[in-house]
Every structure is written in C-alpha cells, then in structure tokens.
Length: 507
Length: 71
Image (cartoon, rainbow over all chains, first blue to last red; front, side):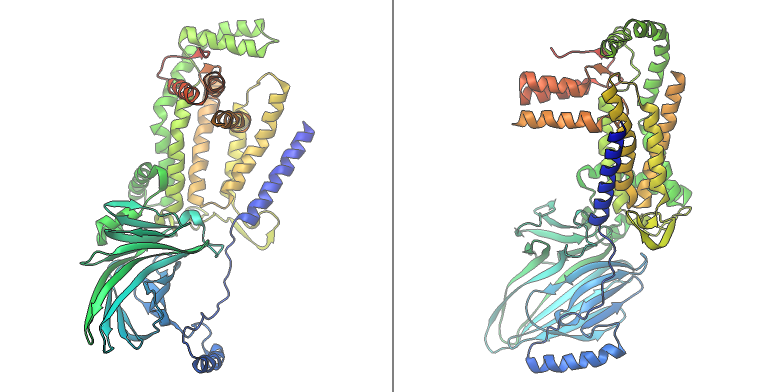
C-alpha cells in the first residue's frame, strides 16, 4: 500500500509539473515596432534613423500604426496595409482581440492614412496602375462597421483587378492563443461550416465569413454582391480567411466601388442580433450546442432575477440538479423498499462471508426478484455527459462572465486568485486559487463516503490510491480554469455529497 | 482489431474511470463487464449492439435489475 501511495503521489506531481509547463502563461510581449513595409533602401535607411530618434520621444506608438477610437473600441491599424492589427474593447476590461491583418487587401500597395474622423477612418494607396481608397465607417451604437473600397484605374490601358480581402489571421505561435477557442466560420450554400486549418478551402455562394477567439468575433459579408470565400494555410501555425474580389474590368480612368458589412464585437447574441440575425450563427458551443445555448438562456434568466452572475451560476447548478431529480427521487423510493429486504440481505451476508463475489451475485438476484435496486443505473450517468460538455463550453466562452465579480472572485472568467504571491511558488505559480482546492476536498469526501468494500484486497488498495489521485488530477485540471466553471462544479459536487450522505443515512 | 480496441477501452474504463464515478449499475454483471463478454462472444458489431442495448435497459424506470447474464 505504502509503495503504491508514494508512486501515486510521485505520478501526480509529474502531472502537475507537466501541466504547468504545458499550460500557456500570460507572457508580456515586448513592444517592438512592426516591420517597415516601405521599399527602397534610401527611405528604409532614413526611416531607420528617424525611428531611432522617435523611439526616445514616442516609444508607445510604432510609427506605422494608426489608431481609430470611439466609445466602444480602439482599433489599431497597420498604416501601410490599411489593415486592423488588433482591437481593444473598452467595455470589456480592454480585452485585446487580435486580427493580425484584418481587412487587408492582399497585395503590395502601400497605404497612407487619409482622413480620420470621429466615426470613420480612410486610407489611400496606389501603384502605377491603380489607386485604392479604403474607408472604414464605425457605428457607435453597436459593434457594426462598413468598409467601402474604391478602385480606380490610373493607367492608360484597361486592367483586370482581382484581389482577396482578408478578414483576419489565426496565429498559434503566440502561447496565449489556445487553438480550441479559436476558429473560422464560413456560411455558404445555406449552411455553416468550420473549416479545418490544415489545408486550403474555397467556397461559393458566400453569405458571411467569420473568425473568433474565446469571447470576440469578426464577421465580414459583401453588400449587394456575391463573393467566393477562401481559407488559406500560410504555415502549420498560421491560417487566414477572406473573400475574393475578382474580375473587376476597369477602363482607363474608370473606378468601381465595393461595399462590405462588418461586425467586430463580443460573441453576444443580443449584440449580433441587433446588427444581423443571420450572423448570430457564429456563436456555437461545439457538439452539444443546443444544450449549451439552453443552459446559457437559463443562466441569463437567473441573472435577470438576482443581478449577480455568481448566484446565477449557483442557481443553474441547482436547476440542473433538479432536472435530474426525478431519477434521484425514484432512487430514494427504491431505498425505502430496500429496507424491507434488509433482513434477507443480512442473512446472505452471513452465509457468504468468505465469498464476496457470490454474495454480490446473490444480492443482485434478490433485487431482481423484488424489482428494486438502490442504484439508478448506467443510462442516467451517460445521459449527464452531454450536459457536462455543454456546460464546460458555454461557461468557458460566455462573454457575460467577463468582469463579473462574486465574493472574493474578481472575475468569474478567470481563476479566482484569492491570493496573488509576489514570488511564484514551485508547481502552483503565483496564484493561490481557493475554489479548485475546495472542490478537491469536496471530491475527496464524496469518494470516501461512496467507497465500498469490494472484497479483494487489491481492489481496495487501488481504491485508496484513487481516493487521493483522482481529486488531485481534477484539481490540477480545474486549477487554472475560469472561476465560474469551478464554482458550478463545486456546487454540483456539494449537492451530490448531500444526496449521498442522505442515502447513506437512510440505509 | 476494432474488437480489441473496444475491449481495452473498457478495461481502462473499469480500472481507472469507474472508480471515481458513483456506483451506478443495476445489474450483475455490470454493463461494462457485460459489453466485454458480448464483444468476445459475438465480435465487434453485434457485441457493441448488445452492450448498448444493455445500457439502454439500465435505468430506474425499466423495472429490471439484478442478475442479468449474457445469453
């Protein structure tokens, strides 16, 4: 036993260490000026000296970044590309949503900022054949925007213009970007798909394309025209999504305009529905999407009543428990009937004292005869699994929990961080999270209660090891998860514990 | 091939996963044991069907419980 215990502790410590290594840590990226796109060695050299001088004066803003700001957001543009690098959402704790090259016309024309107003920003760029004006109009009432692209032939011969307009790039080189939270969405041919990033894709009859991270999303669709969509793999860790502007025939001096509708904001049903109902399909919680959406609706209703997301989560946990209550109730009734059988069971226990397997079989036979059973069965357990997965996805992703505080928890979408240490501890890091620790203790007690004497000493020993290892593994998995999610599980395991204590007592 | 994968999955489940879950099966032998026997006796396809049918019986409203061997 002791040997096994030591082994278990060692094994779980290894898991703990590995977890710390594998889990992405928030890394403070050093502020580095983006690569200059201006070609020509003289300008480059001149710029280099200029940027050195400027670096002292305004180190905050690299020279080729332009910022557009309104009450909702701050969009950081790369001036030379007239593309959005990232967006900071002011009403969501200044959350930073990365697009890398959002709404970039995939060519090497260099743009310059033209006009900057309180609700729009425009860029102009040209080469020897064409002149392009890109104008972004941001709506202040919601998270929608319009993009107008004007293309003019300034050469003396007719030209055919075709280009792709990139919505954005997913880049997993950054340790903060967790692949499971990021994806592309393509709504084409009347159906929604999430293209795999390991190869290129092309789509016809495009309705919209989208890109999202854990909480926010970008959506792009063409106005008055149909476009073809594309997903391009740049390298194994980088993919971009966009649409094709094709076959634009322009005579000398002729110009053409293309209009696009954009959404840049939270994955919040209300916000997206206010702009375009169809775009709401970008919000999706994986395999058990329907259950997840229902659970979130329920959570919202609770929040409307109590005005606190923490209490709403506790109520949700209670509600799911009550939903499964008919099963518990049935089990309780069965318990009562069981008591009638108790003398017979005791008789059997005396008879098969030395043969636990035979005893088990005989007891089961007795249950079958009397059509009772203290256990609810395997099917209810399996039916609960989809709810588990749906809950995980929805509580992980819902933007509503961002910045919601409860008791000592500052933000339900982050680990609870009861104490943040000055120096990082080995294994645990700098944060001391109370909720996962409470959950571990709860699980340990719950298991201790349900532990049954299974006869053989080997099985008993294994159970004892598991008694420590399993709460530990669960604790490690949940340690850095959002507090809202851990809160749900904690309440859930407390309810289970109470139910088990009750059945134990009635036995 | 498929059969042995299914059986080893069930073995892993019995060894590591079942211990944390609350004791739940209404039958003897348990659903996982039953499924293992069915896989060995009938092969992958029929074994899986038999195992699933057993799980579908294993709930408090079925009125069945206790000794239920593979036939």
